[in-house]
Amino acid sequence: MKLFLDTANLAQIKRLNQMGVVDGVTTNPTLVAKEPGEFEEIVSAICREVKGDVSAEVVSTNFEGMVAEAKRLSTIAANVVVKVPMIPEGLRATKAISQAGIRVNMTLVFSANQGLLAAKAGASFISPFIGRLDDIGQRGMEVVEDLVKIRDNYHLKAEVLVGSIRHPQHVLEAAKAGADIATMPPEVMEKMMQHPLTDAGLKRFLEDWEKAKKAKASITV
Image (tube, rainbow, N blue to C red):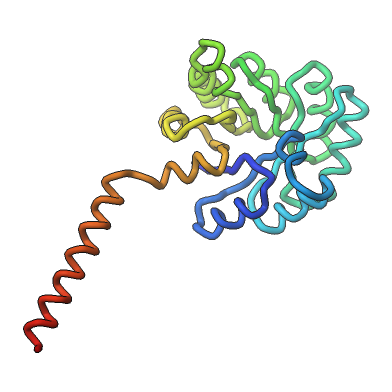
């Protein structure tokens, strides 16, 4: 499974990308608005840092506007994927944008039916938002499981990109469900690296090493 960062903060992206665990990045207007600089400059810098897919979202809600934005965004870099919202005009735009050879990430998907429609319209990626479903008392991962089954049943080309991830357990569940991609805030990826037994084990190893060095030194003297 590919792991994406859900952020527009270049410093965080660079730090984690150096570890070799970042396959791509997803952004949205909220994330980009938090960073200094112009929208297209920020996206361009991320595309230079990360060689994988980088999602940039349209802000128009009508067909003509979304198509025009998608064409402009696709010129930023070859690895740009255009995010389009899961609304009727978004489906119509997705068909036109994908037919123009531009990859689409259909975002704000909250049901398997929506995801199926997105795949039929030509989306390259379907983004179910599991955390927001959990927030309202639904089991968000069920949508992921259903989409993976539908994808496999009918050999759909669209990849299931799990979004709105809140904690490492979401990542694990997405991987076990067979999702293609999980996108997460940097702090979630950092938590994936951590375990108290790792810290305790390293501390013990270093303490034993220091004791061994002192013992050897006393023997030499």
